[in-house]
Length: 419
Image (tube, rainbow, N blue to C red; front, side, top):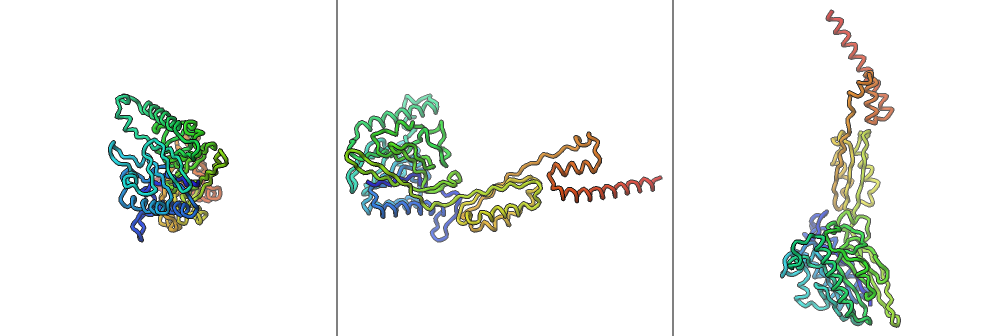
C-alpha cells in the first residue's frame, strides 16, 4: 500500500504577495495551489492508494468561496481517479462556536466519493484498491467543548491543557485496543508533540497548546504516524515512523532554507511482518531570502555598500521573497537612497526593507577638556572615536590646523586694532 502524507496548506495565507493580473488571485495563493498540484500529479502518476492530509486546509475557519473552489478542484481530480483522500481537521479548520461546521465538513456532508473527513477521535476502516486500511484520526481537540463542562470552571490554562492531554491519551489508548493487527494501521494526528522543533507556526507555544508525549503516540500498534500542525518537517521516531510533513509551501521567513514537500510511505507485508519505507519529495516552493547588511560609521557611501551585497545574491533574489535588513548609524541614514536600492531588486517576487538605526554614543567634550587637550589633540581624539580612517584623519587634521591658525590670526588682528 502506498500512502502520500502532507499537511498545513493554509490556503488564504497571502502575506508577501500581490494580485496576479492574469487570474485576479493572490500570487501567494497561486504558490500554494502550484505546490498542491505537484501533490496531485504525483499521486495520479505513481500508483498512490491513499492521500493523507493532516489538517489546516485553510488559513482560517471561514474560507472564501474562491479558496474552497480551488481546494475542491484538486480533490475532485483525486476522487475521480479512485484515490482515497482522508482529510483531518486541524485547529485552523475549527469553528469558533459549538454547533457550527468546520471548514472541510462539506465533503462529508455531500458524501463525495473516495473522500473521508476525520473530525473526531475514532478509527476509520477505509477500502482502497489494495485492501482495507485502518486510520485512527486524532483531530485538533476543541478546547471550547471541555471549557463548557462544570469541571473546567476556575481552571488555569495550564490545568485545562493537562486535562485535555489526559483525555486525548486515554481515548487514544481505548481506540488502540480495538484495532485489527492484520491491517495496515495509520495514526493521523494534528497535535503538538513534546519533542518537536517548532516551525513557522508561532502560535504553537508551550503553555498554550496541549502537548502529547511522544511515547503516547509512538505505539507499536501503528505502522505509520502522520502528523500535522508543526510547520517544520521532521522525523521524530523510527519504529513506528512518526513524521511531521511540515507545511507544503513556505509561509514566512521562519521557513527560510527549509525544504518543503510531502512524504511517500510504502507498507509491504513480509509474512506476518509489515515493512515500512518512506521518502521525502520536494515541491518547487517559493524561496525566502534574507540579506543582512551592516554599515559602519566610516562608510560614507552606504547605498553602494547595500548594492554590492544585493549583487552578490543576484541569482538567489530572482523570483524570491526578499527581506533586506540594514543596520547603520543614525548619522548615515539620510545618505541611503531607497530608489537605488530597489532597482536591482526588481526581479524579486516581493521585497521588504527594514532599517535598524543605531544611535551612536557621542563623546562628552567635558571629559576631554578635563585632560587639558589642545584644540588639535581634541580634534584628533574626536576623529579616532568616530573611527575615521587614518588617511582621512591626516587630511582633516591638516585642514583643521589651518582653520585654527587662520582663526588665531583673526583674533590677534582684532585685538591689535582695538588698542
